[in-house]
Every structure is written in C-alpha cells, then in structure tokens.
Image 1 (cartoon, rainbow, N blue to C red):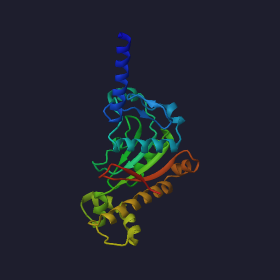
Image 2 (cartoon, helix red, strand yellow):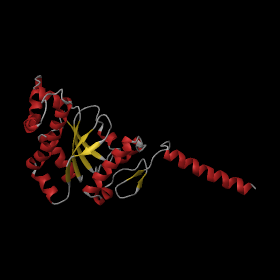
Image 3 (spheres, helix red, strand yellow):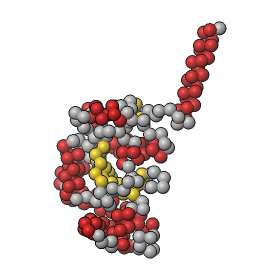
Image 4 (spheres, rainbow, N blue to C red):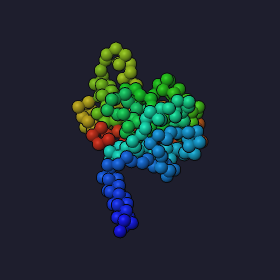
Length: 247
C-alpha cells in the first residue's frame, strides 16, 4: 500500500511539472543551435563559439526571439554569468541596433551575458567607430554573425524625413539621408506621419547599412565571402516584439 502511494505521488508530481511547463510557469530551459540544453548560468566559451556556424547563430537568435514573444525567456543567472565571463568573452554575434530604449537587444533575442556584442546609435547606421568594433567582434573575437537591426516607429528615421536640425543631431541624421533618397519610389505620402513610408525608409536604411559595411570594411567583406560570417538585416516590431529578417 505504501509503495502504491509513493508511486502515485511521484506520478502526480511529474504530471504537475508537465502541466506547469506547458503553462509557462516553470523556469524554461534554453536549447541552443546545437540542440544542447544550457543551464541558466552557462556562458559562451571558445570551444562553443568555434563549433557554431553563422547559420547556427542566426537560428539561435531567432529562436530566442520566439521565446521572448511567448514570454518564455531563459531565467538567466546573471550574477553567475558575470563571474564566469570576467576573465574572457566569446560572443557569437554582433548586433547593430538603434539607441531606442524600446529595443532591448539582449532581451528580445533572449541572450545572456557574454553572448553578443551590441553596437547602438540612433538610426542604426555604421561609421568608422562601429566598423572598427565590428572588425574586432568578428576577426579578433570570433563572432559569426553581423545583424543590422532597424525598428518600426523609429524616431531617428522620422526626424531625418522631417529634416530636423539641432546641434550634432543634424550631422547624425545626414547618415539616414541615402535611405530617404532610395525611398522616393514609394507610392503614397512621403512624410513622417505616414508609418508605411517610415517603415519603407527603415528597411532601406538597414539594407544600405549592410552594403556600406561590406564596402567600407575589406576585412568583414572577405570574411563573408569565405563563409566565416553572415551579414543579415532585420526589423523589430515594437507592437509585437517580433524580429523579421529582410530578404
């Protein structure tokens, strides 16, 4: 009788755990691109980084975005990760994003400490400082992916469309002007009040930035040609939390 009760208790516990897992009430486990479960305090190492391909890294980021949208992010042990990465870092990707506070890059891709390099500037364009940082992140530090991330309702893009002028902001917004020029084929109102036009400029800005990275950095271009890295573009939806890759 006691054995039967113990067995029933064990089975009940298993079923309860499964029910909570399906309901998203337990701490989620993270499955990386190599189909290996990661502990919440695990970090990237040189060996793990070397084993990843650029496609592995892209899949890992997009899988992380799926978890973010479903509110099933990894419950990272951040203090433990901080301690483990104190002596070195082996990030798998470089993400160039806008400075916008509504685009928390590590969160939206469900990444922990030491997983990705993040460069941020209003309008997510490249300059010599960011290019140098990307070269460090890939050629020196071993990252396998460069992701240029734009986002909807981008204030920098809207300001550039409006021709805003204020201090150093004026010169900064000049970096987005090529995307506006490229978007003149848009059918409709070409103002910052038209969110469809803003989205069109945003996508063009991402594509131009990707091409500029290749053109202005022979190091990165050569790595991409050899298949050592990938350069991809994406746009983040503020309303849904979804990251959509550009063709």
